[in-house]
Structure formats: structure tokens, C-alpha cells
Image (cartoon, rainbow, N blue to C red; front, side, top):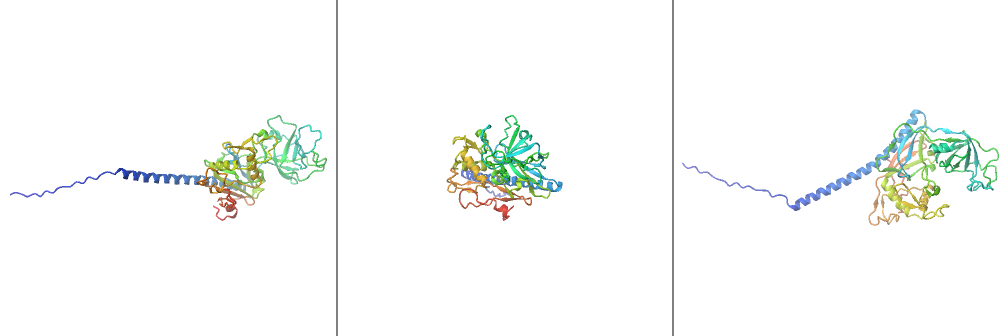
Length: 417
């Protein structure tokens, strides 16, 4: 018996591989997604760095206030000017109360800028701004870093006296200490004196002979707290006490321009309020931003300024100064113009997007705007000691590339966070 077997043909289908076009499309999509992811991560990191820097500053200030209240003694924070960008702060440390210095005796004088040995001994100004000290040892204090611009002196000593911010520009620690050493009052002494206004000596009798010099606070034993990499407190964009602002004068022989105070202290009382020089303005705003933004935009802005005229004696239009050690070199007159704008109560806080059409001082961005990275404002209300953090208020109504009222959120609390 023959068995019939049905046979079936088995069809095997072989799948072809991806075409070159398909591979290119997939790789392109992956590259686009990867680029978008990296950009998003970098943007997030940039934003987080600035937010983290603001939290560092806010935490240090609030911590100092809490310490002062708990210890029932004054405590504070010292802000250090950065070694490479001396118009910015990158580190902070806690400090305890300042001590006072009252060695020797003083005589109040009017300024005499003529060479020593001037036979007429005629004052150059009627304002009493010179404090001549005998046996005060101010030269030694300055050499040890305990006496510097921005400190305060009370004349006469005690509660009956008045505090004045000082400059130490007449104390030269590169030469041997003279018998008489001089401090300069940033604001003229309240009493105009009892001698002729042409006389260098302000008082023939009855003038103050004692004083009280406020030495800098002692740094508490701890490592300085540094801001996250590439973030700074830009002092030119901040609203600071007058004693912290850059001087209009330039250094001797054109070696530099006196910028910000060497040490900037915010000291809280046991009641939690701010005391000392930082309390003078009522409110302090710290502008925290990206270091690259600060240097790039400031360099371009300063180069576009009209140089100050007339230049100080001994200088020419060819003299150069730097805004920072790692910044560009600028004509000295333009840097002086910038300093003058800041001394007049100005600040440099660029708007979010800067077009050349709105700001001719940024010539390289005539087609695409310069996009400013994230930034924050940390504010101290000195009368209460409260510390807050907020965004910059964006409003450039005059289209000059600089914010008109960057601290509005900080002062009104509209969107403070």
C-alpha cells in the first residue's frame, strides 16, 4: 500500500538590513537629542551655580546674625576681594567684634599738599580733613594689615565723639615710619576750627587731642567659604555702603586705582540689626552673577566711555589701568569715568538680552543678542537684619543695556525668592 505524503514548500523570508539613509537619519536624530540634552544640562548647571552662590551668601549672613543673637555679642561676615578680579568677591568668613586703638595724641589740620618745608604753610582747602598723630603707631598697624581704607575713627574718644571713615593714603609703609603720621577723613570734621581757613592747624586751643580707632574684627577659626566656580559678587553691580565704593583717585605713579575697601564687613548686633559702616545706607544689595559675564560686558562698556577730563596731575591719555588682574587694559581716563559713575550712586547690572541697537558699547553682537546668564540679588535690610534673595528686576526703558531698577524685587518683595 502506497502512502501518499503531501509535501509543502517552506518559504524562508530573509529580512534585509538598514539602508544607509535610515542609519543616517537615526544617527542625526540621536545627535540632535544629545545636543539638546547637553545644552539643557549646561543651562541648568549655570543656573544652579548662581542660585547656589546666592544661597551661600544668604546662609553666611543669616548665620552671622543668629550667632550674634545667641552669643549676645556682635558677629559678622567679612567679604574678601578676589585676587584676580579686584572688583569682585569670591570668598567670605565669620568675624567677631572689632577692637579699638587709642594710642598717642592727635591734632586736626587742614590739607597741605605742597612740598614739605613750604614757607607759607598755607592750607589747600578750608575743610578740616587731616588727622595728624604723634605716638599713634599707625604706620605699624598698616604694615600689619590692621589699618586700611574704610575703617572708622571717633573724634574725640567716647560717646561724645563722632565716627568718620578714613583713608590711609598718606601713610607710606615702603618708607621708614615718620614721627608724625596722618589719616585722611573722608568727610570733613564737623567743627571748622577756630583758626583762619588758610592755616593748616585747625585749632589753636580747645581742639580734640584724643581719638578712638576702630580696628578690623578678628577672623574666627574656620576656612573661608568660597562661592561656586566661576560665580562672583560683582561689586560694580551691587548697592554698597559708601565706604566700600571705589575711590576716584588713582594710585601713586599710576600703579593702580584705589578700588574697593580691602576688607568689607557686615556686623550684626546682639539684637540682630546691622551696625558699623555697613549700616549707613539702610539696605545693601549684592549682585551675584557669572564671572565671564561680568568681565566681558564690563570691558566692552568701559571702552565705550568718554575719558574723564581733566586727568589728574602727572598723567596723560596714554596711561592705562585694568579693571581686574585678568581683564583688559583700558585708558585710565575711561576707568576713572566708570568709577565716578559708581560713586554717584550708580551700578552696572546689564539687562537679560543686549542688542547693539540698544547698547552700542557691545559691538560684537550686532546680529544676535548677548544673552546674560542667570544672576541673583542678595539683600540685607540693615535696620532689621533681615536677609533675602531675589531675581533681578528686568527693565531697561532707556535701552542702554543697563537695568534701570534691578533691586525692585528685593525692596518690594513682589517676586522675591
